[in-house]
Length: 374
Image 1 (tube, rainbow, N blue to C red):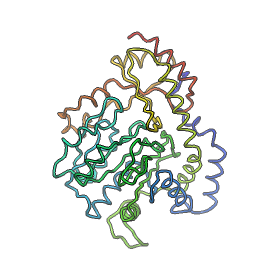
Image 2 (image 1 turned 90 degrees about the horizontal axis):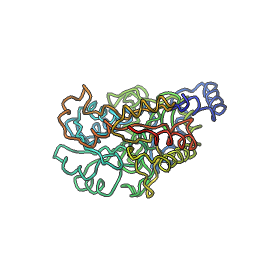
Image 3 (image 1 turned 90 degrees about the vertical axis):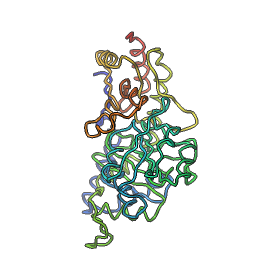
Image 4 (image 1 turned 180 degrees about the vertical axis):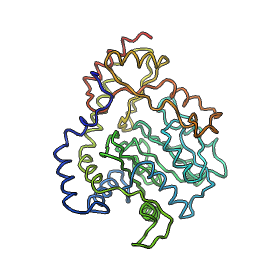
């Protein structure tokens, strides 16, 4: 195909020598867990998110699971609690809630951001609701004054799913006065899945928070519940990152701003050059920093458009064709009225924005899209 959706080998090619050297250094060190690279990565991610603490872990889902589990162990949250979460999200956000014996409360999306609609949150509040989980979907911050006001009014924890938003900035400060996603709420989870803007060469994730007690609990639970060797204060898990992934991420972290800027240039090219009236483009917000993990358009004749683009050499994807409430494992939510989420699920197409796509490629893809007649 002329325009692949994503080529991870191409994405890592510019850093190959640095990655190889970093991996060799770890191998030679003989320290493969709990080492210097993990400690340094945690400091750097905490700094990036403008937060005090970071605990590097096994993946993004585990990061979310650990935050909720730690709050439960500390008595802040409880197994029977309800958590408000976007309906338009990858299923991992919802799985983390269910995994802790809690109940997800699905909130519909805004048509413009495709993120959770804060104006709908208060209608979902019950005495059982103790937390809100905003998801910075596709790299657009899910944050506003209304969300914070509601969280303060009802004393709710805000747990960010920052799997797709690392490096993004909101237009309203968070509870700690900072603007960077991952440091807006009480705690956040990051995914370093290889396809992310900052991707490992395998699975990895992180928990970020300003709460020292929570940070200690997360770190302990992630290491079998052990606070000191062979002394387990929690019935914990094994959710540790390894030194190889930590050092890979440290190499690539140096270039995160470059990667995010490249994606922004591709998004701006799509915005400028796609003129087909059948296509609804994602909104670009000048007062916030979007990092464009995905560039998602919407069109009524989605299957026809995807087939047409494939024939023209343009590969696409769908994020996400089957939202959580339409999955077999969550069939109890199928009756929920979620019109915007359903519309996005039925009409969304993700255009190529990762490597090796350039702004020039996006201009050519736009011309192909403009020729689609439906």
